[in-house]
Length: 212
Image (cartoon, rainbow, N blue to C red):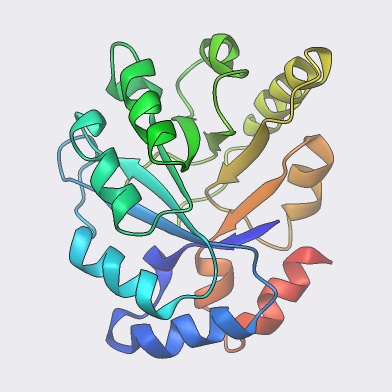
């Protein structure tokens, strides 16, 4: 699956850019929410999320890069999220926030940054619908893919297979046509792509190239 990241879109032409995604074969729209505390950048919040929900026909895959995600997950669910994920390193215990998301009937996701050991996700693989492995450090677009992420993907895929789970593996950061096949071959299910889609002349064609 391919999930274009709206963080890389031209916000001055956001409606136009979302229309391109609606007409494409993208599977979902990835929505990065940053608070300026957990990561040194700020993106957008509920008003933009609700606007996306109104104009985007693709499922909204929300990635929270925020402190205290348990305070906000329900509001993002209510704003139209298809899935809500937050960082494992942002909480002492992820279960309360995960339960709040489940209670809303929304898919759950746990995320880790590149400097977090993938083994920390193992106890939660049967408790979430998806795990998100960051292949760059969360907070900024346009970073280069960290090759060691491939080993993490293989490790998590092996754990999922051994346990006969249906948990999806999502990968975000520096994904492009030069590395997409390697990421997929390592075991990823969902590829998040920002610059490789929105910073091209033809985002619809770029999505097809990523698939190919």
